[in-house]
Length: 313
Length: 244
Image 1 (cartoon, rainbow over the protein chains, first blue to last red):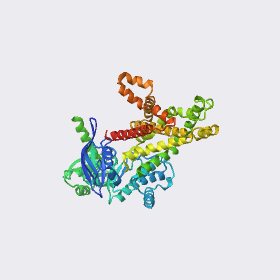
Image 2: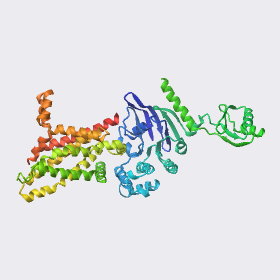
Image 3: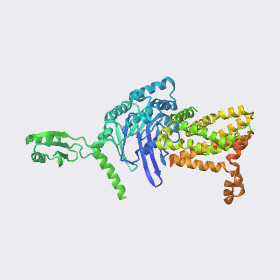
Image 4: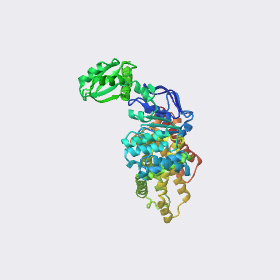
């Protein structure tokens, strides 16, 4: 479990993290979203015990990160931003070092090492110095170090940054496979990642929490939520047919590919009505889809709204 | 304890994973040899002792030890590994001491590799080996004090060059603390009591008295306290950066 209460970090006059409070339970994967400089990494650094909070408190698995730092660090696996590791060491030496510091000796330590090496596909580079590895491998070495002691709580700062699509997919399924009994926080810029791994998302900007909801709930805030999009052979015919559907609030046409999007009035569902109307008017439709909502649009609306307010004040 | 040892082993191995160790050791041996034979007049003196060898150690250390210590923390900060290190379940003190001991061991190794000169002097004459042993001890302690100062200044910056220059300056002042150059400057602005206190901090005075073969407990305590003080300061500097 991770809990923060009014957690704040100030640098002089600048407030990087502004009284953030949240609680993450075991089994949850929390996605931290926000523009660059929003305070995501600073919050994670305070949770990991690398930065001291200016005010407020945080606890990891019940241990206060300031008053019981060693206990908190023991149950925590942390991947810092950029996945730093000692470049002159080989992958095996690095993992051995982490295992020793974590008190994993002998057979138990070897079993854990073998497990993470297999999970992150590090066999081919075990004897290579980390400096000579590709970005994707370096990231996976960092990740291996973070999960080596099978921690109850995991904090991963941009775990899939720099990975190719296949590797991203593998890391996501790794996180999913660990999610059941662990408390996990990841930060990311990739909204599809929130879909793929997170059970909950917090959007922060300018150090404040702007939204805290499940990915589905966030999507429901999109104006595209429950909208219907279609491409028709004849644009004007299709528009005429849609004009007959009473629950449509507005219609937009993408000038590039003539794709029509019909937005419902609040709380209404229009998919069936649209499909019936098109059939009744015998409009030839190439494609008809119900939109779930667009996270990127929600993200933009929420975070830009916040920075706009900042400018005005 | 095991945290300290784990960090110690990792650090020590990292010296030998890069050319740093070999370059340092070779330069140290070449320079100490050159100083002994040319500047020190090892043969010309016609005496079987290692005084010309040890006399130049403070000046060798003045430049070589900061070259080792500058990377101690500045490099970790620059490459971001400090975040990894300090979020592992080790205390600040374990990290500071582990890294320091590794660097000190490394310098001790370089110092030990000067043994041929000890063999030479024993072959040529009949030196007082007690004095030589005491001088080695004094030299090692002084290197440790230089290193501890370097550790603290390396923690204060992410730039290794800045760490190097600051360390050289601080060590230089402490070396000459018993000499007119420093004492007159301080005497101009501070009362006599301060001047005397500074004079008592001089590295050279303590090193030279150990070098005479008289191991005075006060000289040993001086160096040990110096090391502990600067290591403590290192931990405080890192803590301050954490809260900044």
